[in-house]
Image (cartoon, rainbow, N blue to C red):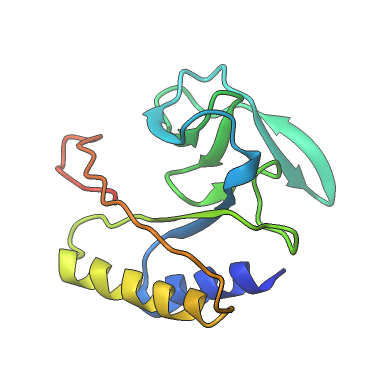
Length: 142
């Protein structure tokens, strides 16, 4: 574990929403939320060792040009992009699904931002809101 992981896990538990953290310098191409074909590579850890899995066809995943970075929306993260003590550029993804309100999501973002700013005076933050109509229930992910 590391401080970045502790911070986002704390925000996730406190606000009861999925939050993931990724080392952005390990990404190849832009992160994107897609439905998997089932052929994508997902490099992760299991029982203390490296394993390669493939998501189910139709599963919602985050990915880059290399492969899947997080499965099951924002639950199982890949080993390749995990945060470490050497991370200097991070991407945090907060996913809000109904019935969570936009204000609840904004409160979680404010909380995460507050804790990240406490890491030091050189911390720079930016955020972007993404609304994705990926399923028929109208759930959003931001």
